[in-house]
Image (cartoon, rainbow, N blue to C red; front, side, top):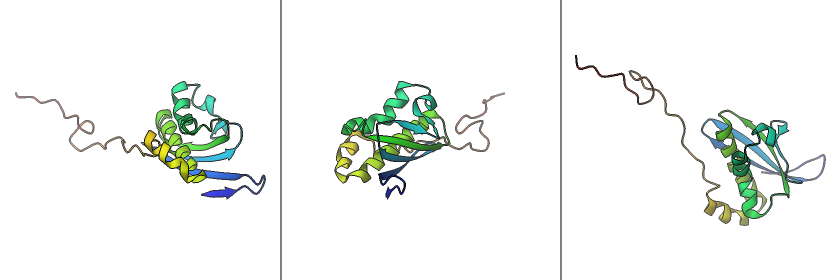
Length: 138
């Protein structure tokens, strides 16, 4: 969804990403490459962890747009790993809206694939999803 911001007249590109229990609503706005998550600086939010920050900026680096767009994120649920992966999916989806020609390189890198792995529910009679009580023969 492309929205022209009434205040500045700049185009805004949206993308939603999900991973485990984390959901990230991502906006790409033309800018200098800053990352803002839930109103905080992205480096501070992701604890200056180069792995998380690298994962988030990977789709932009693939297309050579690292310093062209600001990333504004509203993230909730899950932990930092799930949120970082959900932001990556949201950024990739927003880049596909920006230009349909961006889709093939992002697809080959695997940035448009939603990772479906999530915690399995606990079953009755078991301690966890699959951990059974200790067996006693006598």
